[in-house]
Image (tube, rainbow, N blue to C red; front, top):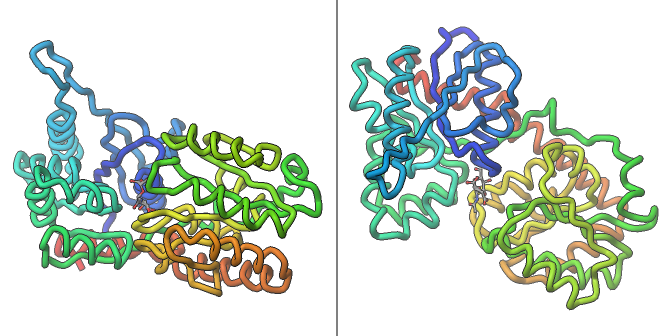
Length: 379
Ligand code: GMT
């Protein structure tokens, strides 16, 4: 790094979820590049780990549960912690992931700050696609976005949606999500494969938080249709609200002997390397980080034409795309891919190339650094 190192506060939702993963991995990479990174969150971000790491600090947000409060005021505690850490550590900027409440809290912290603290807000999707539809929150989200010194979004689609839903015309930087190529690469897990499938069977995988937006029942329908033609197994990773519905459907369709549920897993690169294809039939997906994680491990995705998925998955090159809900088309693509070894190998190579060249950690971290120096007028 040629420019001076920065002191950066990062706030994200620390529990499982793509935005938390991206924020944490970005913080770790920035720390490796010599910046001082201060996570300000209500729990240790799950990908951060607890061991001492150079240039990484963690500041816990304690929420005051004073008896007059009907709801503990997390947002105020966060804003106050941000201001304290900014002052104590002389932060140059706060990088917050999610407009609500994080960008609003950062705005408050900035107003309290005696230095020229900058705020960078990254939009991840749900903060716009769901929350911005709520008329009671809309003005506040627009305000927080307009007040940030820089705003980034993880796909062109999300930028367009933000502009349309919130009537915003300020500049929004496109910064795609990324993977650390030292972690996400095809792992040799041949010894584990036999736990899930016979040698002649293919493995179809779905990884998500099983929220309704993920349309997990479409995964089951697609699998049922393709499994008639291709000997295969379905492996589910993750848990969430639609899990009972999915389990019920699997039982009703008599597929239980062909389906494995692995629950929540930390070593996603290992798990994904088991798959021959990933299914991502979401109703909406601002980016679809899991499809990138699969791509980096050489696994193509069959996904829906929704949100930012088409910016990530190149149809017929690194996977296939079909309209939302079109499980016939998704099954037909799966059959085509899994019965043609030459096509599967071509797609695997294309996946590895695209992940390493377009969504590589060095490239995207540098994009964020450029934004930081720009808002600080230190270009
Ligand atoms: O997809 C989720 O349910 C989690 C959510 C989150 O907030 O972490 O993911 C959003 O941000 C990810 C990281 O940028 C994106 O990869 C996901 O596409 C996006 N989810 C949706 O837009 C539904």
